[in-house]
Image (cartoon, rainbow, N blue to C red):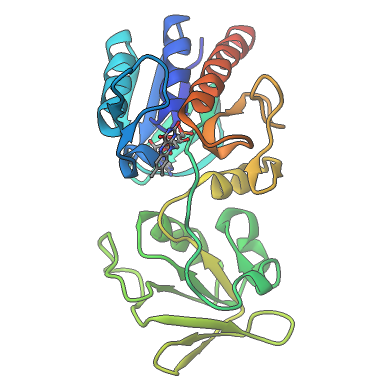
Length: 286
Ligand SMILES: Cc1cc2nc3c(=O)[nH]c(=O)nc-3n(C[C@H](O)[C@H](O)[C@H](O)COP(=O)(O)OP(=O)(O)OC[C@H]3O[C@@H](n4cnc5c(N)ncnc54)[C@H](O)[C@@H]3O)c2cc1C
């Protein structure tokens, strides 16, 4: 049986891992942090904790439980999912994992940069996916907005296609060795253009002429990973059926990155179904 890779170690990803690993799937869970629960305090509405439980302890217990059962837990930031020799390849900034099935359980990303007119130019020069849209900007002037590893990986996809490419970090220091990447650290104000984006304006009043702007703030969330794979979205969330299967065979999604209540109980239920169905898919597909 091929491997299962789960992106996310929140309640959805860990619950999926528990079901998959107990069913015999070689399971790797990749997570960059503790997800939404890292921001939460005490949890009082989850089954089985009459005195409540600290959110951080709940995450730690889940991760330990999955690891004890045999799941491999890897700390890392996924920057993309593509098609590979076993079916899929899940890429972090450092390495790549082959998988016969993938469960996306990466929660809700809140990654939009505070730049005026951004939404107005989406699809008219503003893109969220270098692999999907880079081709349309061949020989053009491109800016990538972001300062993390994800921004660097998007820049690397674009740099050879574009006439020029620069990273705009909006006042941040790059979170990686940026020796080979042109970086502009000025604070961003707005995007301007007539119909399509034509320049980036900075808070100091200066401007950078561009033909395309790629948004790569923070990390790759469900939206960005979905765009790269061609997954269907509904209301900004990953569209899944009752088996938590997406429109691409072997790719499942669970938890806050899919529609419905953003609650632990719902994420755990989604994870149970996605883990069980991913296991069934792997058994049926070698
Ligand atoms: C302040 C706050 C309080 C809350 N209080 C409650 C409460 O009292 N009760 C309740 O039921 N719910 C509560 N919630 C909601 C609850 O936390 C979420 O519904 C739940 O955590 C969703 O689980 P999930 O697994 O879908 O996503 P998350 O828990 O957000 O986990 C997402 C995982 O994906 C990983 N990830 C994302 N992108 C990447 C990437 N590119 N590469 C690698 N890893 C990635 C993250 O590191 C994380 O491990 C609260 C949420 C917040 C923010």
